[in-house]
Image (tube, rainbow, N blue to C red):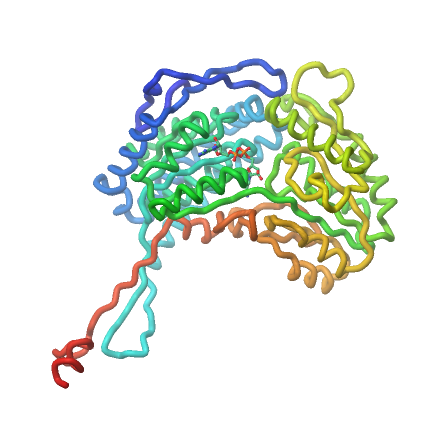
Length: 496
Ligand code: NAD
């Protein structure tokens, strides 16, 4: 486990020599002391990224040349996949198979953006047809500069990959700050970049508190773009900070995503997807389908089956065989989720199952899978993101009612619908006001497809070619090609 920051291609002690404790949420033990960056460290990281962008030539490399580094990073991740997945488990708490999946996905993300970097060489410019034949014009894409990336703790390495890979592919340099709860694998990414011989300053990694290191990033005038994934309140702060000097900004924020199940759906399949949609990663998933709307005809049977299946989920240390639900990431997160369940109960909700730690557990931030029913529509339990293994289930009668309930939210990240009637499913999918819509499933995520939210769930899209666009500027180049020596502008003036 790393004890230093990765700045300008070197491992350096934080300027003020501070560290912070890393706690394993399964055991509550302090497993490491990570370096705590302050504004001085962030300044050094931004200066290195600036130099790598402005002088050292990273953006001048061809896409194919940059792709070589990206593929080397992908291979470096894969070469240490099990070891990195284990670090993710002891840092974040998630079950090992989930962490293993995340790490493979992170490697795949670097490969995907390596391919897109090569494509940038193949399509360097787009001709523009002008109505005025005395000019030709074209649009070219250019890397936009130095990016500051701030990420959350729920998918530590994967969220880093979603930002670092497209930024490097585009020709940007980057300063990355992982969440203070999960610093371990981001620092390993620095080691992998070093082994891949990524030029100094192209990727810099500063660990530390959001209010210190994160704040220093968003305030730094040397940064051209802020790429953020995290909570809405911090997203607002970032947008306000970006407004001061018109930094580019992309935000991936929270959600309270609906899952609409019609009564022609197979109950067993629906229950599987509902569980995947809310209990995966202990429900600490921005796109978790945490509001389930079930048509009246199957409501009672589906709810009974869901409660039964939720009760079978094996809870425990993510390193233990067969565990499907680990601890929540921290004591604070655990307390917030329990408080949200209690607030729901006080507002009139019924706890159909869960809502408490599993029997006989005295260490670790464990919480049973929790199902709430009779949740009032104006309660926080229905309207606010809980970010834990807590699902609200409610009956509906008509398609119109389901759509209205689904869209009645200030968020718009994801939504899901399940029905054997494909025409109806497509109609409901079209009616959802959300950036990610699933039909007959919940949560499958693909590097090729755009990811991001409507409304207060964010601005911009990650992944796919949209993710690359986040790190590119568009330049128009227009040429006067007429044989008439008098210019377009001066001619009418001088000859008049
Ligand atoms: P958070 O907003 O508390 O923290 C996110 C990051 O911001 C951390 O690195 C933190 O250190 C940093 N930060 C905090 N204060 C800061 C400040 N003043 N200036 C700069 N940086 C600061 O969020 P979290 O608790 O880590 O993550 C959970 C949230 O993230 C949830 O709301 C979830 O929905 C959201 N999320 C969204 C997506 C998505 O793709 N839309 C993905 C994962 C998580």
